[in-house]
Length: 60
Image 1 (cartoon, one colour):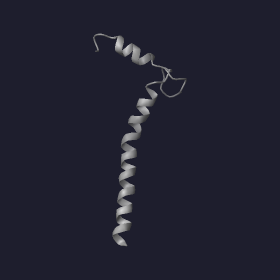
Image 2 (cartoon, helix red, strand yellow; image 1 turned 90 degrees about the horizontal axis):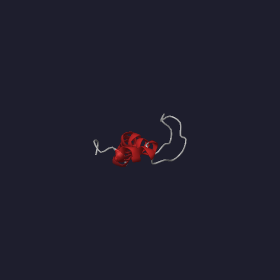
Image 3 (tube, helix red, strand yellow; image 1 turned 180 degrees about the vertical axis):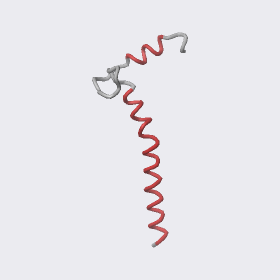
Image 4 (tube, rainbow, N blue to C red; image 1 turned 60 degrees about the vertical axis):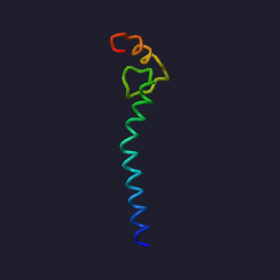
């Protein structure tokens, strides 16, 4: 019984750590498609920033 409780706590802690690490990455990816120049407010979906990025030959 004791081992089962410890393993559940470790699993829960591990899941929380992964959420803590990966959630900002997923939010950054999602907000990179935002139409707003300010990333705080969501205006709409756009690929404008990626078009600008791939049009810059010096960067690519």
